[in-house]
Image (cartoon, rainbow, N blue to C red):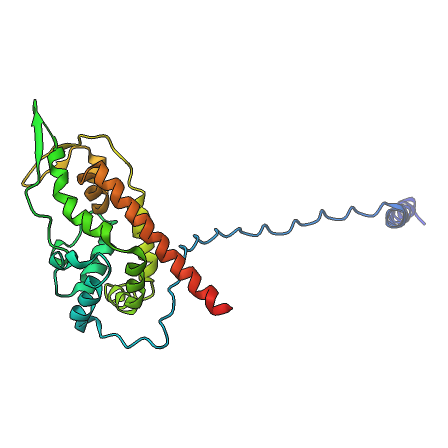
Length: 268
């Protein structure tokens, strides 16, 4: 056998031995690193639901209510029969009364209100201003204009007023849904509006005005862009505002208490 052939055989044998040695004696390959679990996407929490203020159920023996459109005479009679509400008769606009109340309440947190749908006649007298050196402010002589209306409101018995509200609540709710809120509660909206008005900040007086067109506006753009309800509360003067807010706080307390007490009593 030639030397070259022996060399080929020897090389082949060495290759086989090397492969066997690697197979039997080489350390096992390191396991692959563990695959980290996929990171779960954290969903944004849903916005909190607004608080819900329950409405007490109607009395079992309560007589049926009229429809909203046929309610003017009966509701006006019931309203003006409340303790202290007699003078209110002269302030009420008699037609579409429940619808007017609902629209106006809903508008009070907005910049504008539908004045044609307000439930009360405007306060008599002219808006009084004063000024010097080119500065115009609301005159303190303007504040007594609101005294008569405020006197009527303060004379209303809160407990009787809230009882009347809940007695006629199905019609308020129907009128509210007719505005385009089919799944929402008018009672929740009432509390929301009351909280907005009660939270009206106090501002320094006298309040500066401008008259860019026909009507006066607040000179401070932040005041002028506030809601209609807050602009009205600033307009009537600090003393009147304090008295009105105190009445609104009392009414709010009665509404919340009546709504909470009724389910608790039913569960007993």
